[in-house]
Amino acid sequence: MKYRNDDMEYLGKDMVKQMKKKSFFPALLMAGALFLSGCGGSVKTIDADALAKTLATEITYDDTLQELSDDEVSMYIDLPEGVDSVMYMGSGSTAEEVGVFTAEDADTAKSAMENIQSFLDDQADSFRDYTPEETKRIGNAVLEQKGPYVILCVSGDSEQAKEIIEKAFK
Image 1 (cartoon, rainbow, N blue to C red):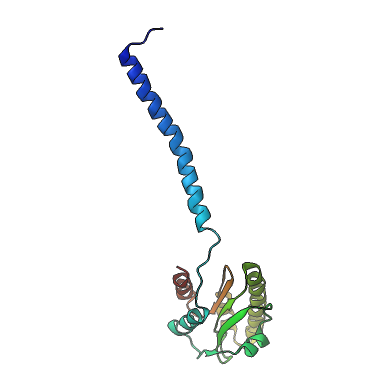
Image 2 (image 1 turned 30 degrees about the horizontal axis):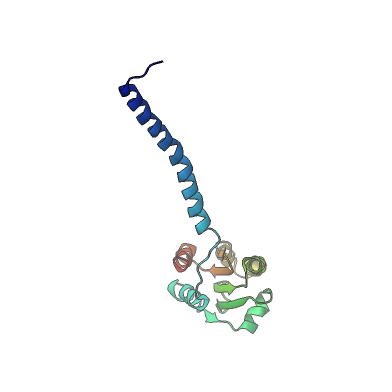
């Protein structure tokens, strides 16, 4: 088969276009994989005291929240060894409370979160007969784990609590 120069030039351009198309998709996949692997797993280090204080002061509560000592926290929540806590709690007439818990690693934080959930379940049971409207507040509590951190906020404004938490981790 004979080709003219014009045909060869056309075939050459067409082959280059095909090669560009075929190499673009794998390159795009590789770039996406690199981007995602760079984002996964790393959690910003935060100031737990500052986050707890912000949650306790920037949300409107029906009760006055007071910071608890480590001994007082341990009376309410059985935290795993090595978990630091900053917790604010109301007088007991409401279920309102804020806590930021810092563990050594994500696995320990997961265990702490399970214990905090048990605490919330106990709170809901206690308030069910005493002040039933508080049970709804507990049901809408924000309880999140972000890496080695567990954040708890029982308030009347869960959306604002979520916004404050997200902002702290940006």
